Structure formats: C-alpha cells, structure tokens
Amino acid sequence: MSEEEMMNEQQIASDSAMAGEPSFRKGLGALGGALTLKAFSAGTVAAIFGCTGPALIIISAADSGHLSGGQTVAWLMSVYILGALISLVMALRYRQPITGAYSIPGAAILVGALGTVNFNEAVGAFIMSGFVILALGLSGVIGRIMRWLPMPIVMAMIAGALIRFGTGAVDAVGNAPAVAGSAVLAYLLAARLLRSVPPVLAALVVGLVAALAFGMLQPADVPLAFTGPELTAPAFTLNGFLAISLPLSLLIIGAENAQATGVLMAEGYRPPVNAMTIISGIGGILAGIFGGHNANIAGPMTAICSSEEAGDDKEKRFGATIVNAVLFGVFGLVAGAAVPFVLALPKPLIMVVGGLAMISVLLLAFQQAFSRQLGHQTGAFVALVVAMSNMTLFGISAPFWALVFGVLVSLILERPASASGEGQSTAATGTH
Image 1 (tube, helix red, strand yellow):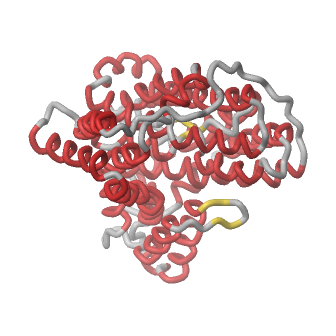
Image 2 (cartoon, one colour; image 1 turned 135 degrees about the vertical axis):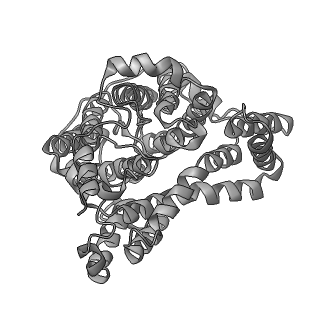
Image 3 (cartoon, one colour; image 1 turned 45 degrees about the vertical axis):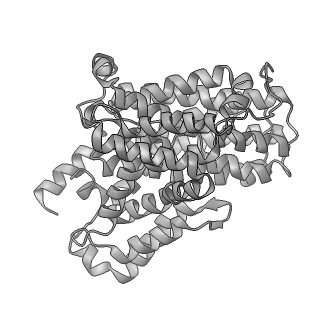
C-alpha cells in the first residue's frame, strides 16, 4: 500500500468530515451559506420522494396488521420526526449531506410479517433491532468492514440499487408522457439555458403545472385525517426477533447505511461510518418505543441530497439535508392530515423527478464500479446484477447480497489483482 493510500485510510478511520473535524458550532456557522437555491430544490425533491410512496407502504403494512388509525399515525410520526432529527444531527455535526429517514424495504417486509406477528411483538422487535444496530456501531465493526470492501463492488451495488430510479423515470414518461415528458423537457432546457435555476426544481414545477392542467392531482382516500397517535406496549419474543429484528437489522446495515456510505464516498466525502450506524441504532430504539419500525440513515435520500443537483460546492450540500429534515419533520407532525394531500401527487411525476435527481449519482457509481484502474470488475458486475434483481434470501433484500456475492466472486476470480494492491479497499480509493 502506498503512503498516500495509508494516509487516506487513517483519515477515514478517524471519521473526519470532508470539511474538517465534527463540530455543531461550525455546522451552524456554515448553515447560512449552505441554504442555496439548489439545496432547497434537492432537499424538496428528496422529501417529496420520502413522503409519498414510502408513506403508502407503511400504511399498507399497518393495514395488513389491522392496526388502528392511532397506531398508524404514531408509526408515521415516529419515523418521520426521528428521521428529521437524524438529518439535523448528522448534517450539522459533520457538514455532510447524511440524510435520515427510514428503511423502505424494511417497511415492505412488514407488509407480510405483520400478517403472522402481532403488533406488540413487532414493536418489541423494532426496539431489539435498534439495539443490535447500536451494538454493531459501538463495536466499530461496520466501519472496519466498509473500509475493507473494495470500492468498485460498493459502487456497483449503489448503481444496481439506484438504477430503478433511472428506469422508473423512463417508465413514467411512457405511462404519462404529457406530465413526465414536460418535466424531462423542463430539466433539459433549464440545464442548458438557466444556470441560476436548478434543473430538478424546474422539472418539478413544470411537472406539477402539467399534472394540474391534465387533472392528475387527486387527493388519496386515506382514513387517517386528524387521528391522534396511539402508543403500543412492546412484547419481546424470539419469534419477533427472528421474523423482524434480524432481517430489519441486516437491511439497515447492508442496504440503507451501505448505500449511503457508498454514495457519499463516490461524491468525495469521508462518511463517519460508525457514527452513522450508532445513530441508526438509536433511531431504531426510539422509533420502536413510539411504534415505528426504524429511523436510520437513508440511501436514496442521501443520494439526492449529495448529488450535483444539491449544489456545485460539496461543502455546502448539507444544506439540502437540512431542508429535507424540516419538511420531514413537518410532515411527521401533521402526518394524519398530510398523507392524503401528499399522495395526491401523480406517481409518474414523482418517479421522473427522482430519476432526474439521480443522474449524477448513477454516473459516478458506474464510472467507479468499472474503472480498470481500480480492478474488481467481475466482482463489480456480479454486485451490479444482484443489486438490480428482486432477489430476497432469508428475508434480506438484494443490496446486502450484492456485496456478499460480489466480494466472494472477486476473491475467487480476482485475488491476484487484490493481492497486488490494485483497488484494495474503499479506504484506498473512496476519497479520490
């Protein structure tokens, strides 16, 4: 390992931020300059993405478990408000666009799990999952694993996991050409002609106008309005741990945190991996107490807030996370009344704007995944196709297995390249 690579590894190991040592005071001091128009645009897009389809998944999971309206509102409030707090803490302390929310795949697996596990056991399982993640974060093992993983394989997992945003945007244009097509055209024209207007913001505004003109803004019929939150007593059982805690913990670490870490590294940041794991564990415990499945670092929202759409100056992109946090917090406070109105946004518009916001992230991920200089190309290809699939093993979704299978294939087929030090780890390559 070269002297430069050793220095990079030491910098990442110390969890130092790109802009300097962690400091809330410095974060607050830099906040005014970070709240740019592009930051408002990217933060708003990330919030709209997180407050629409994902909220409906939680509502579907609550319905499958026959939860009361109060329990459903408590679930929504806990994950959105705590997700907002995680964003505020991480963005201000590290001055990086580390964005909190909750696990969307985790909510999806609960749609089935709550059909067989009663909600008291599920709440106990949520809390146990938080303690598992917290213990892993305090141990430092996650940071060591992320430093050991080859960067190309991590980047290929990111590309495979997020490519659905790109294909979703194409499908959206096919399904609603007038609305989604108008958004794409506005994006292209703004990127070409209007340097002062964020292209994604232009796409969102024009898309909303088109949706209104074509009568596609229709509030959803979700019976939660003005319902107060209702807490649920936890029950700690082995069944709940095996059915919910274990797969949920692996999803948070292997899908959400790994995606967010990889995206931040690709953008040139040095993410505080262990701190991200610790706060995801704390978020899981607190969310569980209030009836939510987990509040943690979110991969897709971090990707949007850390992209070029959030600003040209990387040191100011954390402003997008602050904007997202404020919108998430407001949504959580008025969740019962807000859900029907947020779900009024047409899905094609959400998908196309989300896809446009991911362009720079996907380009970076593909470039770093298949760079000949970094090696591990076969392992990266395996990680890409696994992450693109809908494969689930033992209740754990594809991004986790993309890392596992990518590394295994690379160890078997590409060991000489690894042994020679080519593309050894994320620590050696993640800050270039």
